[in-house]
Image 1: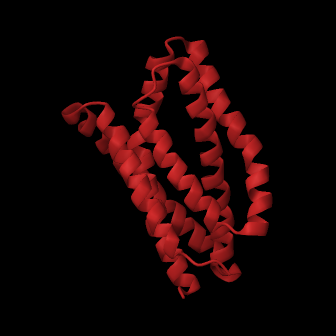
Image 2: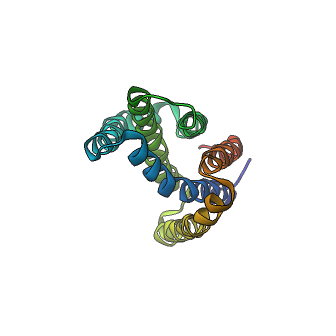
Image 3: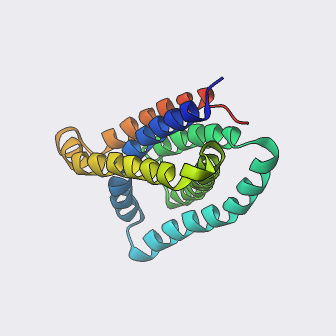
Length: 183
């Protein structure tokens, strides 16, 4: 069984990879949404749908994670997000975009709520601030580095490659979560 420190390191590694994928994806996802929707109103509506779904889901995810655990939400959310990112390359209508945005909001809520909760579970109270600060520093650096390199990748290989690479990285990051242990 992994120790608290082992869980922390594995979770940090997995989420650093996830942050790298997100850093590659988010800037181009925003451009994709804006181009796909066409109007600023449709862009705003698409982003708003995602945020609304994320906000509503957070309460329920947090509540049920206390009963069934954090790991299941992290893993299920990661696998669904893998499919959502890939599906952005296949959609052809605004309705499909809106549906993906809602699903993206649900999975984003699962990840964000469980990230904070699981970090609280696996860190010791005496060092919690330092451990969480280190976690966010490393995860943030990974996202920043991938954002800086993402433009180069798109410039060399095209727009859709970011979606495929991101989906693959999210899938790998999610597989790692099978090895974390809950109390």
